[in-house]
Image (cartoon, rainbow, N blue to C red; front, top):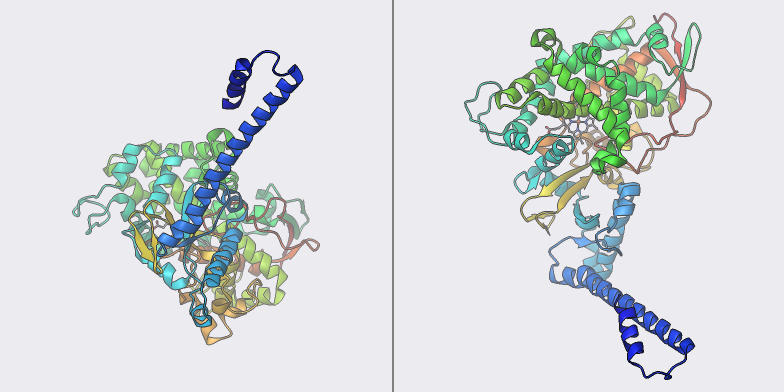
Length: 563
Ligand code: HEM
């Protein structure tokens, strides 16, 4: 704006006849050009000052803060790369930051003693994350629940999915120590007490056995050849003893229906027979919710979500006598606790929707990856089949503890761990609520601390060689390997107070399902499909999804003597 105005002022004040129209035009152009150049120069200068301040001077004055991976465009930072493949970006960032730091250290001795796993910072879309990739430092993150908050993440999800502020405030306000219902000796808010309630339902013990038996009975009835052929709309061909179906679609369908049955009985299915299908559609685009897309850009996520919310509202309006005896303890207990603090049906449905999500998002994908690896490693498939045989009577799964017992089924245990190692893509993220020092580095309030599980799980020094390969024997062959499940580097379920309370049931669901398939059927890939690609561009809260188009067909054939 300034350019044309200045030049027109100059031109109008020039004596007439001083310049021809052509040279006036030239002068005007030159003026505009000069003014554009000065604007660009000014922007360039501002950018250079910002960059010099942010990545040279600030780190010099604050050597106690994590070093940041430099970026070119303010606000956006590494947003694009984060969006494409956040773990890939973190690996590159760790290399770059460590390389820069080690170059700054002059002596050989100091280089040798340089800790290559210092926390580092990176910014994406104006949010700064501190990445902690050292096992011991990650333990500091999980332990510190005063300066590092998990609740912020949960509350953001609640807001995104429609819980109102008043309800969130109520759920996160401390409750009396002598309240009726679930014991609350520490006077916690219901939001925090819920973690204890999950543990009460899901850790090994009577309450978990109730769910295990329910799951066993469901698997026993649903995993029959005839029901498969009848119920699975996606079966592409069938004969009297063999059917073909897409593996990912099948495991997703089965696991979500299983999880739903275990927590809600048949009632939710009667209210909305498409609930499980809606959930799978939603779960595949859930990253739009995590990235908080504006609603007009994520109709495909919002529509199934809203249908599920409406069904859950309808569920809580069904008279208690017609639903509560079919539901898991946690669903009824959560309803009672929420109603006691005045939460209405709409807000209750949203809270319980998050439980549905926690139960169902990961197990369906884990079983897909486990079967995929087993079919490509027939020796392990046979070992899995042989080891789990004593849990069956004929074709019926009877013993709910046998398969989960690592002493009785060491190969199954190793296969479970190695599958989680290869397909776990989550990160534990905490909001820094007070400045805090982790790994010797000061993390500033308002930013986020993040423990990317995958970077821990791909550390050759801990998990051994051929780290990119699926090798269950790494968990069995050596003394160090056998100790890996209790290593601080092993974090597929996060850590600390919010460590996944469903991890025992998840192992049971997946291994019981796979064992029953192998007991009753032979399962083979149709043709020789390439190893399916993980969908690395989409953030997940645990196990990675399969890239669209990479699902593949399997043939399931009745084994001799099976039903
Ligand atoms: C292979 C399967 C699973 C994986 C990899 C997985 C992973 C995770 C992870 C990474 C977290 C966040 C922990 C943190 O950041 O501190 C989490 C939380 C949680 N998971 Fe799982 N999960 C799985 C299966 C399940 C199942 C089957 C259930 C329920 C039956 C479940 C229930 C929960 C709950 C309730 C939380 C929230 C913890 C809390 O706030 O107390 N998970 N899970």
